Length: 400
Image (cartoon, rainbow, N blue to C red; front, side, top):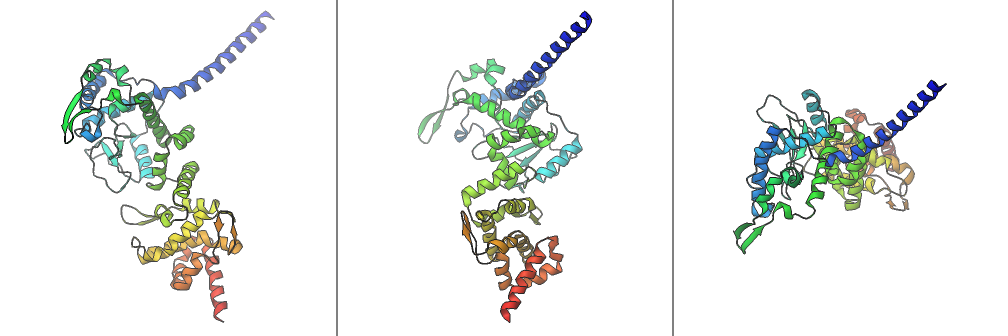
């Protein structure tokens, strides 16, 4: 009996220990992004040299502090970031797995036989593939993909990613004297890194963004989704709008509600749905069209109206050729027209419904739309055939 009681006590102790162990693990997950990275001694020596030069130049982009940064600076940063990621449980993919992810998400192919260690992603021009090493600033916000370390990052100056004053205390002597320069307005003191307001908060935020982005994109860790949406919305909107990443519904929702807040019913919505890839081929982001369908009601049709407005402006659009315009109109009509069966001519809440859809009015102007769609088997769109039959019936009835 005593042995049984002893076993029960031990079991209870183990259960309690496991419970508190789980709590500690959760706390650890929240804090590891801000933990000092474990950097190998040799790496630390090399990083120290790069960091010293960055500190000597100061933190003033407008006065040339970042002008001489090079691939050497980026390599030092990546070594640090690799350590941060490893301390947060990041799992390096194989070369083929990483290359597949990069192509799926960003549309870029990695050539491991090339003599470059990085890919540059221009967030404003995804087809600009020229590899230049420009540190993160208000003017330059390129993303860099490390083929060697299999991660993605901005090109941060090192003082923006780690607490250099704690990890490299000897560097403090480099900021004991001011950096004085002559400008057109006279003498000027360049801002030092130690004088940047809220520098430690920026370091923590940048480290957290690094971890969250890479853990989600390359380790499929969905626990970071909420943080990315709430704390890193600019990056998420770039993923959706510039690179067409629509696999995560919460990311799509963020991008589309942002559009609605900024543009309401403007034609701009078409620019993120109907795009040309870097080979000049039309790509249609069908997930965004589905989002519009899912978020249209009798009293809310602003996104649908924006899509229709893009359709009406399509005839004057110089980005697409004639065949592409027919295909785009088919996709717009497939999305829009079915709603007009129930809501045409009604106004309610945020919705103003026209008497007829953009597909109907476009067919009235260009009867070839019907024959082109038929020739292309209605582009495989489920509702398009029924919509065109409806419109054709109305036209024939009115002509009698």
